[in-house]
Length: 470
Image (cartoon, rainbow, N blue to C red):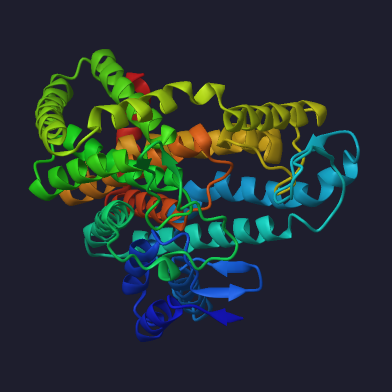
C-alpha cells in the first residue's frame, strides 16, 4: 500500500470526523471531483479520494446497525431500493454463471487490454472480480447513505451545497489549468494526477486551443461533472428558484464547460436545451416558458459581450473557435468515434448471442452506458432498472406536492444532477463509477423518504389521485 500527497489531506480529515457522519458525507461530495488522484495506491490500482470518506461512513453506518440503530425511514428506503438491489444480486450471479453457460458463444471487449485491441471469446475468468467489488461497494453506499439521509430530522440542504461547492472548486481548478497551459502558471500535476489506474490525458489540444481536464482523467469527464452541476442549477432555475448563488454557479459552470472543448459536453447542452423546450411546449407550462426566456436572454447577452471582448484582446480567436467547431462537427469521421461505435455494436451483438441474458457483469466493456448495461445484465436487469427508475420518478412527483421549499430545493437539485451524470454516460460512458452519482442518488432517495416519513398517509392519498388523473 502506498501513500500519495492526497493521503495527507483526506486521511486525517477522515480520522477527525470518523464519528461525525454528516461531515464524512460532505467530504465525500467535496473531494469527489478528484477522480484522477489517489488517496491510497495498491500496486497499479488507486483508491479515489472520494471513496475514502465514503467507506469510513459505511463502516460507521454498519456499526450503528450492528448496535441496533434503526429508523422508520429505513423501511421506505428499502421499498424504493428493492428493484435496484434485485438487479445488483442478478448482476453478481450472472457475472459468474454467464461465462460458463455461453463460453465461446459470444464475443466481448475486455475491461482492460493492451494493443492490438481485439474481441475475445467469452470465457470464465477472474477478470471481473474488481467490477463486482465496485458494484457491491456502490450498492452498499447507496443503501447506507439513503437510510442516513431519510432518518435525519434536519434539512438536507447542506449536503446539496457541498456538491455545489465541489462544482465551483472544479471550475476554478479548470481555469487554473487553462492559465497553466496558456501562460505557464504553476499547476500541481503530481497532486491531482496520482492515480496509477487511470490514463491521464493532460496534453490534448485542438490546433492552438488546449483541452482542459481539470481534476479528471480526460476533458470529457470534466465536462460531464460540470454538466451535471449545470443540469442541477438549471433545473432549479426552471422551477422558479431565485437564489443569486444558484444563478452565478449555473453561469460559471456553463462557461467553464467550454474550456474542455468536449463533444460530450456540447452534446449534453444541446440535448438539454431541446428537451427543456419540448417539455415546456408539451406541458404548456407558462412558468417554465418564462424561466426559459429569463435564462436564455442573459446568456445570449453574456456570449455576445465575451465574443466581442475576446476578438478585441485575443488574437486568432475566430480561427481557434473555427478549429474547435470543425473538430466537434467532424467527430463522426474520426477513428476514435468508429472504435466507440464498433464497441457499442459488438456489445449489442453479445446481448443477442446470449438470448438477451447478457454476458455477466464486468465481462464486457462498451463505449456508452446503454449497450454496456444490456450486455452486462441483459434484458432482465435492464427491466429491473426501469422498474426502479419509474418507481422513484413516481414517488418524486408525489412528494413534491407536499414537501417544504427546502426539501423541494434538494429534490430538484438532485434530480438535475443525477440526470446530467446519467446523460453523459449514455452519450459516452461505459459505466457509472463516480461516487458523486451515488451520493446524489442517495440524497434524492433520502429526501423523498424523509417527506414520506413525515406525511406517509398523505403521500398514499396523493399517489392514488395521481393515478386517477392519468
